Image (cartoon, rainbow, N blue to C red; front, top):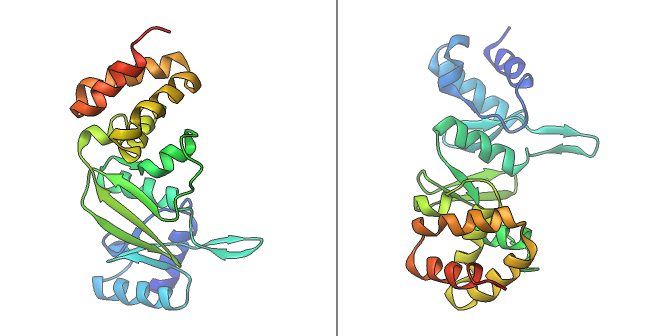
Length: 198
């Protein structure tokens, strides 16, 4: 079996969005042989190069071949590099019903470095963010924090009033509990809008 065939056989057993890197394939051949095989597989479109030395397997669907879903690739990336990754504030605001604007770019916040990943025609941007913007990584309270930062100081109040009406009470409480970790303006807005009764 050639090195390329062995790599492909391993790639076929991986879940969608799993990262394939030369470093993890050295049991199949020398670094040079593995690099050459990966390059060939990329040219023949059996693998997609998404960044320096990183590849993913395209997904075969009944509509043809497509790139893996961005959120799956990003989740694997976070796992591999032990980073916290969360969707950008614009996406969070859209999901929480605070805006009807659909983000045109796929952007994620990360505890790791800034970088771009090319997934076919799509570019995913990972932007380094302070820890408080990644707390808690998932969950609606964390999404609300990122959405509010994106919405900005001048409109945060009305967005919080809407969240108070639409989020379950437990999530409103979670958001209130997060305020100690947040910048002054955001902490103050949360206190003013979510802690008043009525």
